[in-house]
Image (cartoon, rainbow, N blue to C red; front, side):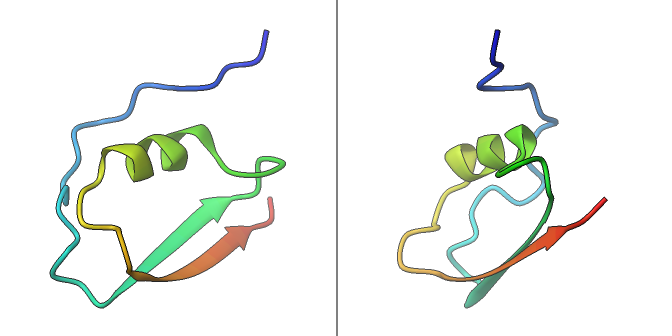
Length: 58
């Protein structure tokens, strides 16, 4: 069974619309981590933002 979603803590920063650049550091879980994917679904103000992506190698 493939898990597609997981529980995360309440967002500390829910609305990111006031930021110019969003930096995301994500562990390399053969793609995108479930907690980060959940955060991006729940966060507000991401449309038209510049992103800096970093994938950590473990």
